[in-house]
Amino acid sequence: MKFSIIISNTKRSIYYLKKLSSNNLAPNEIIYLDDNSRKINSYLLKKNKIFSKNKIKRFSTNFINKKVENYIMKLKTKYFVYSGYPGIVIKNKKILNEKAILHSHPGKLPFYKGSTTIYYSLLNSNKIYCTTLILREKIDTGPIIYVKEYPKPKILKTIDDDYDNFIRSENIVYVLKNISKLKAKRQKINKLIPYFVIHPILRSCVFNLR
Image 1 (cartoon, rainbow, N blue to C red):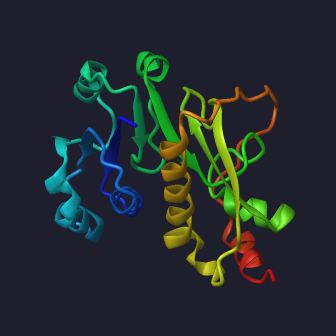
Image 2: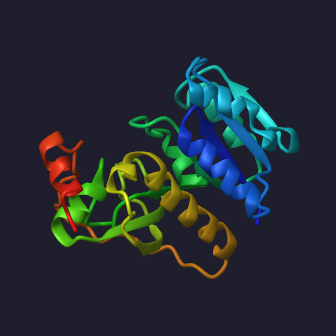
């Protein structure tokens, strides 16, 4: 399958690139949103050997600006894996309508939209899910391609770091390998309010779950 990936200076992007490489999935292009950060993720990303195997287009920005939009629209690629910076969404309707922007969300959609949904899912049902969907303008509302339940990590305090990135990368790879067999299902309209960043007290309650 032909696809491209949008990456940023985040641990998630590092996970995605490594997972794609280990599964022999090479993107046509890597669109690199480089905010010129000097933090460890930026350093590790630039040292990643996968860069030497792929066409890379670097933009000095932390969001998809006009230059990035124009570049994406010129590409013949239909499918894009999205790994942008947290809290920054794609707003260009033309891109969202003409390209299939794949995003893995750590929650069971349409029930758990928004942020830190793993914690809310654990508190409500003691279960963890990851959903891969096609992005639309409103948060976590696009067509659903694949939903999978994952076992709880042995150490719950790894959720925010390695575990979250692990389940997202697992979902993305499965979708890329099986996209011809999977059918995107439009989400039913509902009035469920997206979850916001979980309060530290509720987070600590999760850490006490068995």
